[in-house]
Length: 226
Image (cartoon, rainbow, N blue to C red; front, side):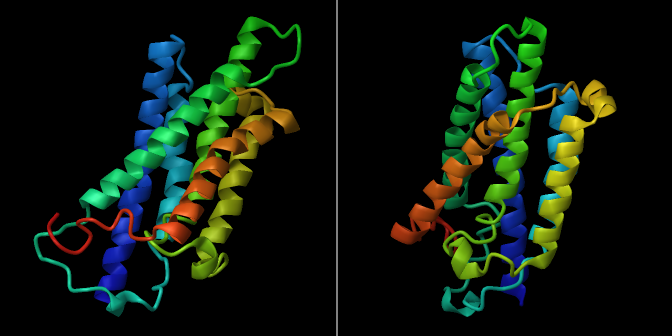
């Protein structure tokens, strides 16, 4: 049970750091190369305090896998963070931020759209991309080596319920007129929503393949001092 609790803490720390690093890299990349901010400050707060928290809390309630005792005892000097975790979160944060930055700049917009509206649409797509990325990747954050299907897609019911609440709230932020004013968003078309799904889909597929082919790729320092 102690190992289950410790793994939960690690998963939550990994997920929150992954989200924050992805946001930071996306902002830096767009400011450096495109001289434009992909998110408004209130959108960053929404990602971190609302949708991020809705995903992180049920992630902290993830049931044990049943394989906890197959791992060696943890060296007391090894804490929540370890080398493999840092490499894993940085790798996927770089991939996700590159895809989000590319979408922010190249997402196709209807012809003749006003410049101000076009920028707001691109920001909304980037903003929604991060939120959807959170909800897609959180299912992989439940374990460093077991895939989503092996863990059970609906095993953590509180996470599934939270996902529907979180995505529902994001849709309200996108499509309610008063929310558009507060969050500086613009209603998206179905095609634009599909573009917003791309970063999460890319990272999800890469992590699924990684767990199938090289489940121990990011295990360095997990139990013993690296």
